[in-house]
Length: 111
Length: 115
Image: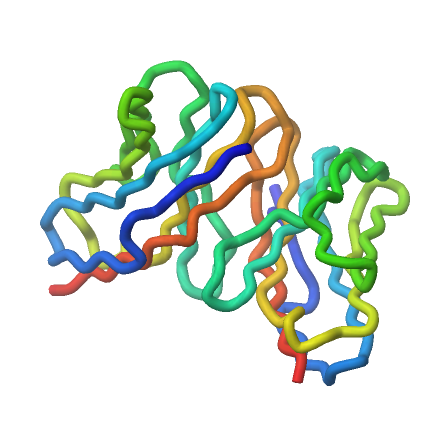
């Protein structure tokens, strides 16, 4: 069974640019989560999809972040425009119930 | 509200000696508690989970953790460290068993294993 995959593994962009991160969950997992770890801080929850619906987006930092999950399969997280403080590692996880399986993360660097 | 506190940011042990990584939690509900591990350039991997069944939980690679409600603790232990255990470990809490809900992470403990 393939695990959670994320693309790209690394992204380096300049302040003001746009970046889109992609997550492919484990097949059949209705729940999809995004988390972020800013350097030196703990991993923090961003949002939770159940199929294509946003169940909980309480962790989204501001309206520069847009997450979508059209069709209830893969998800994208767009940052527009990116700011320096958006740098960090973005993790995606998926689950059927309460055990979440994590992808390797996307390391985003905003210069 | 829920939170976890990992008491040590770095722990160093010699190969073959016991490992103890400390975690205290706070939760308004009966929590589910987890330990995840992240090896360099890898995703987070679940080591073990507590979901209100047995208080002593056994996980993969010889790790175990004991849920102590009176102490609000969920410390991770292993009798004998191996070089391959060197990684970062996260104590995690979520709402009760069977609930697909967000995870709240501790700040992580980096385990170093020396010869």
